[in-house]
Image (cartoon, rainbow, N blue to C red; front, top):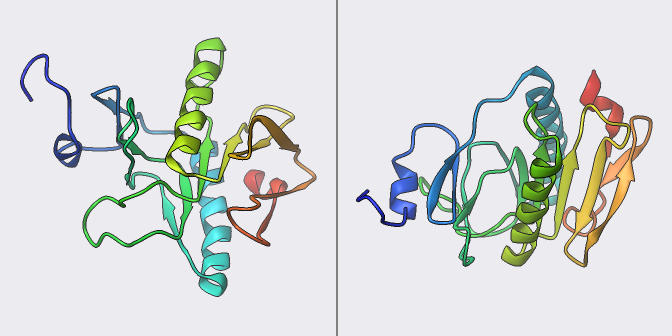
Length: 180
């Protein structure tokens, strides 16, 4: 890539590791720790069981969903439910129906909150119906944001059962499973 040029999806294909294309730049995403990875895995397994019966596909982190927003060209959520077209060996051609973002150590504080809010807005602008903000260190473990009411969230705590309506109809997830 030439100095001063904007990164492209072709550049994203050449990246080693997890990254997103935001603001014309490749944004690398560092590996995560024990708890966040385990939590994303538990959500994936539950969604996978749902998809086997109800349709759709489920993806773990490091898959790329391409979008065409002014400031963003891809997402790579920690887990996702998707009903769009397949892409064989290429990146998926559109945003997921449901995206899960599990907070890592660096995802706390005012700057991180702004970045997460901007990313949720991008998800909704790209067509994602529901985004989960999973906070394993807080009392409000899962905050469910919906495209229909993007500035409001439904909060689920450790002893409750979360959902992702209308993106994943009828699916529920016991929040305590994130901590087993």
